[in-house]
Structures are given as C-alpha cells and as structure tokens.
Image 1 (cartoon, rainbow, N blue to C red):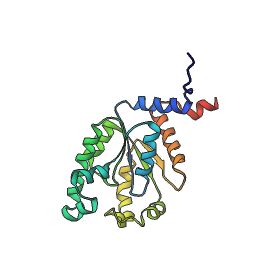
Image 2: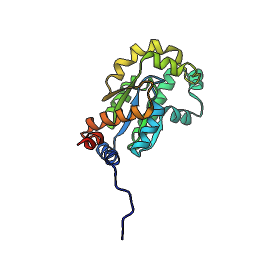
Image 3: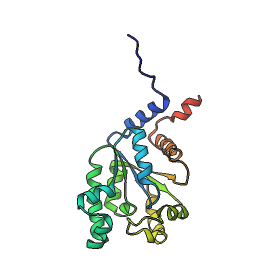
Image 4: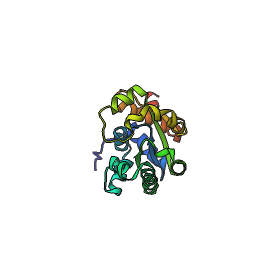
Amino acid sequence: MVNTASPNTAADQQERALVHALGSRSVVLVGMMGAGKSSIGRRLAQRLGLPFVDADNEIESAAGMTIPEIFEKHGEPYFRAGEARVIARLLDQGPQVLATGGGAVMDPQTRELIRDKAVSIWLKADIEVLLKRTKRRSDRPLVDRIKDLMPQREPIYALSDLVVQSRDEPHEIIIDEIMAVLSAYLGVAAAAEENKA
C-alpha cells in the first residue's frame, strides 16, 4: 500500500520537538498593552498546535463583566487579585500559549507560578509602537498611563526567560523569531539551521 501522506517538513518536526521539550509547561507572553501578546500569541499557538488562552478574556468571563467595569466597580487591587487567581488556574491546565495582561507579572506569586509552570517571553515594544497601537483602545483602563507604567514594569518584564522585540513587522517574522529563541532555550535544533546544512 502506498503512503500518500506528505512527508514531514523540518518546520513540522521543529514544532513537534518544541512541544515535546515544553512537556507540561506553557508559553506565557508578557509585556505592555499593545505589545501584540494576543495577536502574536494566537498565531504562535496555531504554529505549535497548542490551545491559545487570553487571560483578560478569561478574567472577564469569570467576573461576568468587562475589565473597565471591574476597575470602575471594584478598583485595581480587586482586579489584580482576580487576575492572579485566573492565571494560577490557567497554568494548571497544561501546555498552552497564554497571553497575560500588562500588569499580571507585577504580582510576585504570579511570577513564581509562571517560572515554575511555563517559559515566559517578554514581547518588548518601543513606546512609539505601543502608543500607536493603543491610541484607539478604550477597553483598557490604564491605556493613558503607558508612559508612566513602562519604567515600573520593564525591569519586571526583563526577568522573563526570553525577550523578543515586537515591532511593526508582519506577525510571521516575530513568530519565527520566537520559535528560534524558544528552540535555543529548550535545546531544540532550529529548522532553518537544519535546512541550510
């Protein structure tokens, strides 16, 4: 009988090897609002064949209200406590690509959980890029404080396992870079290097 299945490409093999190397860990994207955690995370999850989860959506679902409503009715400390609980629950659900809210990793316990159960990637973006991407966003309560929040948050984001620059390039380029740094970090040979050989 003839096998009509197409042969595995080096990229497919790399993706499978990455998922295998992750084991039960998730890939957690951190960074400021506007860094592209959701849009890049969704495509990265697709590439890896893992579920994609947006922590902000999960928080809204759990609370039964939008994030601006949570801030307005209960304040930021209440929101942050709920965010920490939701992220802890999500990290227990096995391998996935998880996009976190901009302030999620400011919580030391959340950082510790991410360190134990995931590989964290900081999507680092310049202020100009963030402001351009968020200027029309009314759904994020802290959007007008980006300039003030960056100096507080960036030293914490820098504790991530990996850093990838988010910029105005096609998402696929950023995802290729994430795949490359993740491969190096997990000791998986990059498909591109194997192809060159």
